[in-house]
Each structure stands twice: as C-alpha cells, then as structure tokens.
Amino acid sequence: MLLLDYKKQFCTGLKNEYPLEEINSFFNILIAHYLSVTRLELALNPKKKLSSEEIKLFDKILLQLQRHEPIQYIIGETEFFGLKFQVNKNVLIPRPETEELVSWILSDLSDNNTSAIKILDIGTGSGCIAISLAKNLPNAKISALDISKEALKVASNNAEANGVEVKLENQDILHLNKSLDSFDIIVSNPPYVRDLEKKEMNRNVLENEPEGALYVRDNEPLIFYEAITDLAQTSLNKGGSLYFEINQFLAKETEKLLKEFGFKTTLKKDIFGNFRMIKGIKQ
Image 1 (cartoon, rainbow, N blue to C red):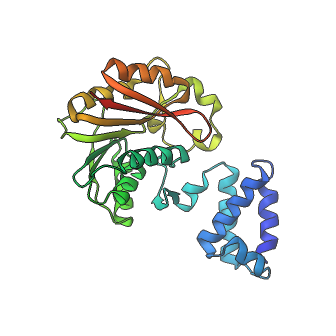
Image 2: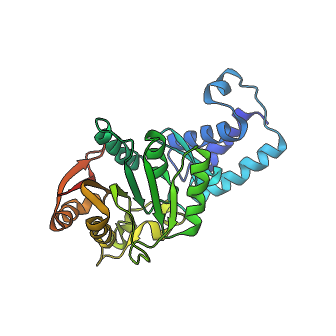
Image 3: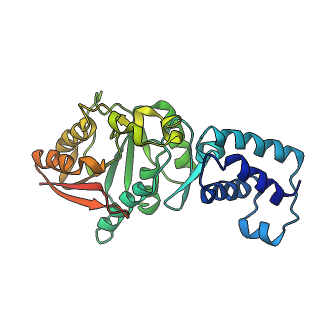
C-alpha cells in the first residue's frame, strides 16, 4: 500500500476523535519516528510504500489513538527544551508552559556567575526541568527528588541519554526522611489540578497520565506548595530563588502563601496570558 493511501485511511479512522490538524500532526510524527520520513520527503516521493509489517504497526497505533492514548507514550518519547526525553505512563508528558518556567530560570541566571550554583528540582518526573537546566548550566550542581521509583528510572535514563549529571533521590516531599543540603534555587512543578477541575481535562490525560503527579484534593489544593515553601525556609540560601509552576486559578492564593512565609514574590504569565509561574526570593 502507498503511504499516501494509508494516510487517507488513517485520517478517516480518527476523524470522529480529533481535529484534522491534530490527526495530520500524529501522522507526521509517526512516519518521522518509525520510517525516518519527513512530511516534505513524502510530498517529494508520493510513491513511497508501506510494508505489511509497517501496516500492522500503524494499524495497532491507530487503535491506540482511537482509545486516546497519548502519541508521546505510544512512541515512547517527546521533545522538551530542544532535547529528547523518554516518557511512559510513570511520568507526566512535559508541557510547553514548563519550558517557559525553565526559560525564566535561565534568563534570571544569565547575568550571574553560575559556576557553583546548586539547584533542587522537586517532583522531577521525567527529569525534564532538572536535565534541561543541567544541559544549559554545565557547571551547576543539580539534584532532583521524586516519590516514584519508576519515574526516577525514567529520569535516570534521560539524564544519561542527554549527557548530564543529576543527583536523583527517592523522596516524598510531604514526609522527608532526611534533611537536605542547602541550595541557591529550588524549582518544582508539583501536583496542582483539583478534583473539581478534572471535568475540564482531556481523555488522553485523565485515562493515561499518572494521577499522583497531577491531582490534589479540593480541600488541600496548595498542600505541595506549602510543604516545599516550608522546606525552602531551611534549605534555600538567603537571597535564593524558589520557582513554581502553578494552577492559574489559584495564582493569588499561591502568592499569598509564599508571602506568608516571608518570600518576595513575582507572578508571571505564560504565552497564553495566564498566571502559570511564580518566583519567591528568600529574604
């Protein structure tokens, strides 16, 4: 079968589940990943054929997409901050707004001497924040914590694949079993989606991504922010910075929390105009 003919079949199979633009994006990702064929190469070579084994593989993926499994989990990787990251159902799929958080940190550091800077990433998941910082700050000492041993395996693989060193530890930030070192920067993208907001989530997220990395109870929406900010009082050097990705609907509440702990705060909007990040400076 011609690859272009299969594309028509692929689009028809998903037309009731996704917008056409997204279906085309899926197809282009798949042919690039499995066939090393770009969209341009397919246009220039419309006679490109699929083998029977390739058709079986793509048919299987089509069924997975019909069940709303994320394309990133299907191919086992995604891109974040210009780097490739392994992902599976033990870790969240990195989001563009988290790239903005990394950019903010690097921008703040651009005028400073970062040779001996120490950074802690709490709830590292795939390691996307810690590893992206390590790649761009080769002289910094970077540590990362996560409650999930399976997530830490993914982070370890990603650190190795991207050629950086990150000290990884299995820790529950709500129940630390040891004191931590002191750091110049603490960063976290903790769980912040309230149960009441689940109805706004897409199926691919609700049915596939790890609940423990996403959701908090409605009556304790800032439980992780409070624990991490409390930790920062003892583990963040004076003048150090605390960075969070936040729930846009709880921006003012999160800012109030940090101020109550004595931090000087700055809220920042993402590219969509929503407050999705906050920085606290330890006084």
